[in-house]
Length: 235
Image 1 (cartoon, rainbow, N blue to C red):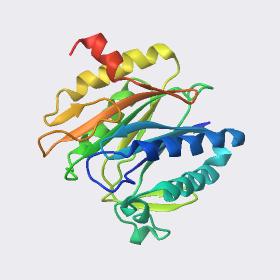
Image 2: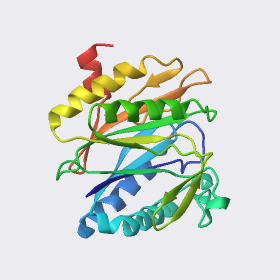
Image 3: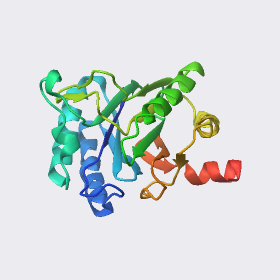
């Protein structure tokens, strides 16, 4: 099984998501269960959403096409979607995409979504830092960061200018969620102008800067980890 993530801006402004559209997308995603796909909007970070899915490996292309159909159906803005090209040399700033192999039958994972206001390039360093930490601790992890293009199976390619990365980390046990999410939060405190926020929080910082959300994806259920981490570390 794969855990697959798409990060995309489909809204008509640069600071927040239209939650009515998010609700409609979630309803469509739930209908994919008939194909043995568990899919939800896991993160809403500023004007970016992350769709996370647990799928059988053989359904990767089918799943990706379905996600794009749903996104095109509800999008207010199409820049990210239209940045994806069948020709990798024509791919532009597009959809953030990555996937990892699941370590549990439930697809348990931590999902991070980053959002920049001005496309601050340093955001890629943040995502790669999280990926390295998770791998060093023995987890399956992958980010959407790319330096040439990113292949989206069944759909096309996103270009190297794609910003607002996502990170997916597959875990084996529920206890791993508590340990790893707290480690990640603490590690990211090292960066200036990076702010941990609740899901669905608009960008409300002094630019330049980056916000990020962190969620648990558990058997198709979503838990925003902000409140749990806040209670644990008392910030």
